[in-house]
Length: 68
Image (tube, rainbow, N blue to C red; front, side, top):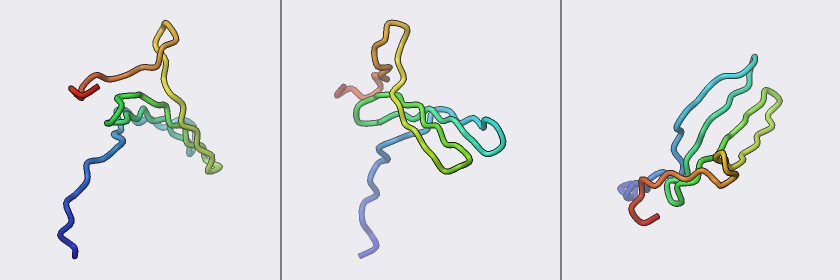
């Protein structure tokens, strides 16, 4: 019952940085699609997750997964 196979994590944290008194900014990667997101967490409990863009306005994608 407790010996279930562990699933791989869908999201991995690439970078984590504190901003202000209780806020933080993380760069998170979706391991299935390779899409990079900025995850903003404020001290008031609000969170925003937005895709990161490159200089041409295209979504920033990591090509680590050979299936991508």
